[in-house]
Image (cartoon, rainbow, N blue to C red; front, side, top):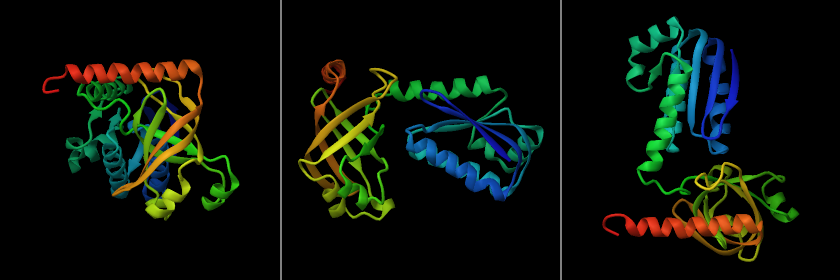
Length: 251
């Protein structure tokens, strides 16, 4: 089986080709994890060219669907081949994962889900990904080489950003996490605030506060180097969101 990937601003399309059996399940899982690490949790799986799918592969699709859901996203299937449609309906998976007759309809469904999420009042930066890198060799050696970590945004304004990082998957305790993000330590941040612009913000910052939580460490980092236009945009965004929240019922 072959997997073709098409990336868009807020979602991705994975087109599967060939026979989808047990052997190829890890490939799908790796693609999904790689996309989620990039902050993309809304996926369309195009299965028009899948000639065969077995029970283990069906399980892999369900796991991918649950993985996307856990990240606040959605996974849908576009134009399944007659074989895939027949198997999926017989097993009843279509009651869990939406099937669409065309890729266009599937994309519309994903975009609708994205819009509903925004209109439902989800925090505009909560759960967005932030890529973290360190400028010094000491911390990079702790990580086994210079590679980006993935954190979760919590808050942002024109002066600072706050994010969460859980090092459990990499075998880091909270104390080790506090060592990585020590107060005064420099860190390079790359993140999106989609309500401002589609492109990424990239800033150099210094950690001003770090605290342990049940899910890792919560880090506040103040900007050291940031484009003037980006600082102004993030500051305006914070003011706008504060105003909007005050207008909501019950506030």
